[in-house]
Length: 63
Image: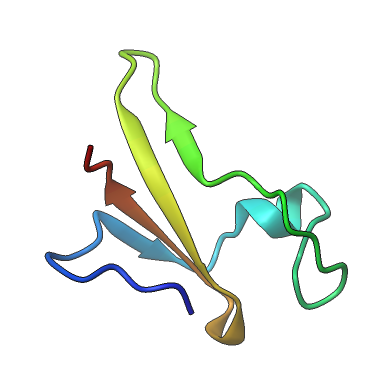
């Protein structure tokens, strides 16, 4: 799992964007998957994938 050193994620969920896009690392390993979400107000969120546990974490973007 990729790690984030401080704080806590905004959300942890079983729903995975990689799976929905057909890029699940367990079934079809790919290296260039999305790593950020940009909201309508231009807020940027980081995505961390914990494929071992089939979880996706959403973090506030740190610059």
